[in-house]
Image (cartoon, rainbow, N blue to C red; front, side, top):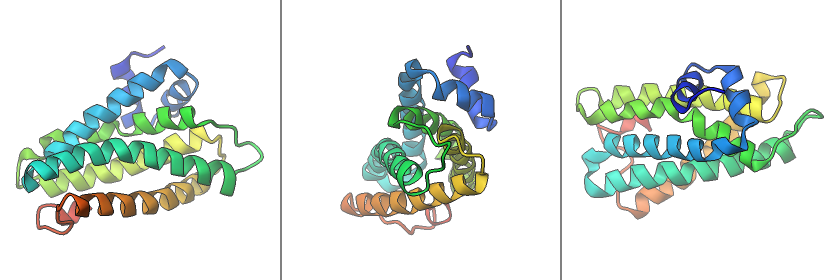
Length: 182
């Protein structure tokens, strides 16, 4: 069994065995939560340019996003786009999706104004790729295309909820610093 840090590195490397290990280890739910908390703190740093509300939105948005995206993915993946091989529970998705947030920890380096949008964009794309692997493994899909579709549908829902949340906190969604990463 891999250590917590090894699991994070494996998840960031898009390692299928890492996602299978996490999926099948109910004890890894706490670790997945810790990955989400760490990536949420890093996201808070990335959005700190918007003041306290931006930091808070980045932090809470990432935590809420984990649960919302996992639940949405669970519904879409196990009900709407299920396959005969699909066997998953919400815990498996929470664990794999939680670890798929590992690359977002690099957002802590987004405190550098000239690198902010690059770091947010690159880690966003990286997390999406990790998310696809996490979903494919958790839902036992043979097709990466099906996993991508489930992720895209879930992502659209997540973005809408995140945008509403940011607006409620009064954080603009299209600033020069944030626009490329959104």
